[in-house]
Structure formats: C-alpha cells, structure tokens
Amino acid sequence: MGHHINCYLQFGRNLRAYRKSIGYFQIDIAVATNLNRTYVSRIENGKARVTFDVITKLVRGLHISSDILMRMDNSN
Image 1 (cartoon, rainbow, N blue to C red):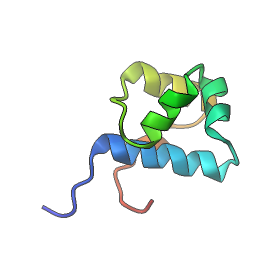
Image 2 (cartoon, rainbow, N blue to C red; image 1 turned 180 degrees about the horizontal axis):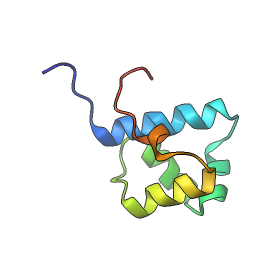
Image 3 (cartoon, one colour; image 1 turned 90 degrees about the horizontal axis):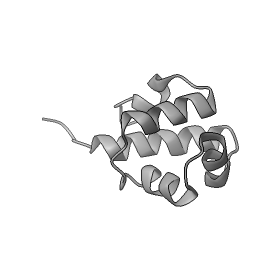
C-alpha cells in the first residue's frame, strides 16, 4: 500500500483548499452552511467525523459538487 491518508483528513484538506480558492474564511463557510465555525475548523483539521448530513449542508450551502470535497488524491 502507498501512503495512506485518513479520509476525514483528506476531506478537510479539500474543504480548506476550496475555501481558500474562493477567498472565504471559516466563518463564511459556517454562515453559508449553518454550521458552527469551530466545527468547520474541526472538519478542516480532520478531527470531525463528517456525516452525510454535513456533506449535504456543505454541498448545498457552497453550491459545489461533492466531488470537490470527496477527492482522495494527495495533491493538496
């Protein structure tokens, strides 16, 4: 097996990369998705166990494809 990365950590890195690419702060993500800013931070750091409901809030609130958040490559 190659380099293994925790899926929650990769998800968080994807969210952070997307957030920065659109010039948002964590509070902007929190407001757009009705999530707590501290929770957004925990997601980005791979410390939160993201559920389908949270993924749905992120996708709908940010108007993005889930593919952006679910990528499992190591390019970030």
